[in-house]
Image (tube, rainbow, N blue to C red; front, side):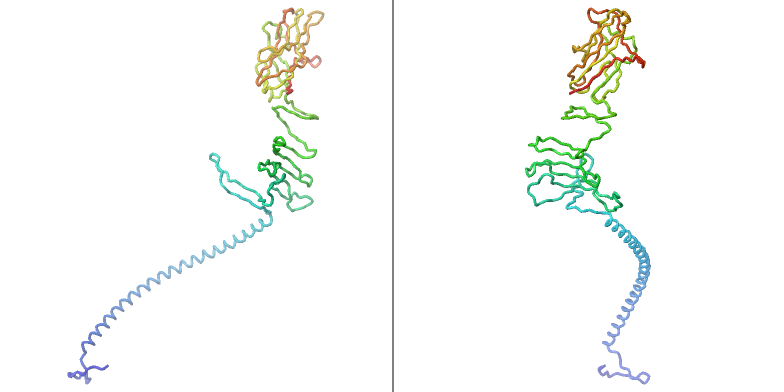
Length: 390
């Protein structure tokens, strides 16, 4: 360091010391301040290091916990991977899902408070401008039925929606066909469709095929029946459209030879409840049509030559159809029968038929009682038969 020569120097302990210049004094002061500032910074840094050491220790603890969680999750992932592989194997082995187009979960339909999600199954065809009869889609049901020990699923049945008629007209008539397996061959079970207008537009239902048949425990038909040919061969058939009644009241107590007239009370036997019902002492028909009616009435009397008429009435009015007979009351002629051959009546809904006994002029005025004998050796029931014929 080149310092200017200072005149005034003096030795200290034999060493000549030159005095500190103002510039050097200023430099020393600056250095002292820097040392103090650095000392403070070092102290702050030490505090930060101590704080960071605490954070490092906490992070190390968290890392250790997370490492345990990762280990547990790794075990779960391994287990789930095995389960997924098993499911995939089941899906691959047991599922045969081949379809040109399937739309599930389309626009929801909301009837009232319910929500129905539509399922669309359709097959797009773009190669034909005119759709021919039989053209459509089907849903097939396949499963293993164990034929000859086989394990491969095969077709067991299917539901088809197809064009029955109106091909290419823009106004198609569509049918639904239900089929099922029969001795290794798919056979029709039920085929329902509409005919095209030029084929009279009627609805048609075909059950079975070939020599198929309709078999039911009971069939109730309330409308008119038309058949080109009707064959019957039944060993246990129920009455349909027929009604048969008997008088089962007290014999010898009901006088049928009065001027006011008396209606016979009937007990039903073999009666179609969908066609007839009781209405007081009468029979009510439940639907309009043509009915065949006949009766046989047994009377007994000890009065001479009683001759009441037994007549058919509808809603309390005479029909003009009646039967006569008489009891001589002599030589043991104390019983007789009044029989009416079948007559045809047209009846409206809810019309009521009654059979009435009434005194007629020129006959005896004595009592003629309804007669019933239920003994097996001399059975006699007054009876009424009604049959709807059209």
